Image (cartoon, rainbow, N blue to C red; front, side):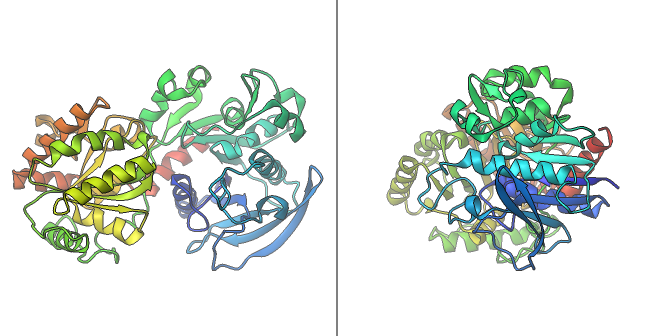
Length: 477
């Protein structure tokens, strides 16, 4: 049994802004179930929501701050969570990265540097907790200084650093670096300095014993100029210590057999019941109820990364075909308005819901026929996995985790029952439209379509599978 300190800036259901929270809420739970002794450490934000008891453990003094360490549980699990409690930094409304007005915290560097310093005290068993980890597993830039600071310690634990999205690097000015009072030997081009700026992310990439990211394809992509954000040379240099492990999903929460958010539970043996969810979806979104018309769906942040502009370019041609299109998401105001304009012009074909609604998200996955994910880049992606689980055929661009989780429908994959969706290469409206037309042809062959659905529904995307790969990685450290 290994002792693992899991370092994160967010964990579902305590607090969530994105996919990092899903991983941090699921992977430690899966590791615990496989017999590892795992503890999560994260900041104690004002907006954390828990029904579990929270108790005081100890106080550590870091950089002139007295920081309390509190203990609770990850709700619904036996995973211990240690909360780094420093009201001067974390006791404010807003989320981990932005204030109530949506503006990035002006003192983000100070907040997460303090969090990293406290984590090092815990990792070195200097925080009066009488527990010392074998592995410190850090996630994204907010924890990037932990491996850097631990590199200066004698007899330190092993470190793993997971990149969830290279686009977010935690970059700050040299002045900020000086104000943080960090050890001088870390400030050099082979350390945390990046073009005369402080890079938290680089701290994780340079000093960790192992680097992982959330899919094998993304691990290759971030070694190229297109996806490496200036750090591709460093990642190529550390290639022998870099690997990709695909994220799992919460198979209890996303399970068509037991999902209380949908109108009719079903599985791969009762696929005909999926049409009842389709009817419910059409009715709820005020679209004509017709089981024969294919329903295309998208649940996403409306940003260029997700290829929303490609969909907007394709919509005029899509509307010449017998189909319906439903979308749930928010983001770029221009994208939102253009989508709403389409819905206004074609109320019998398009339904756009701006915002996020968990219940509707589940019903869309259960009721739609085809799910669109034309992302320009996608480190892992989860909706293409949810879609397969709910018998909804994903159309994805061949990038990152999408390339690793969806098997394109070609004669060979049809014959050996591995096909689970449609994959296209180029991030262009033409390539996406071609894949949409292919899906319409396949949809007109019910027997083939049903086989695609069954193939996807039977794949194993549980966290237990991914957690075993992490355990194998830990055992090599």
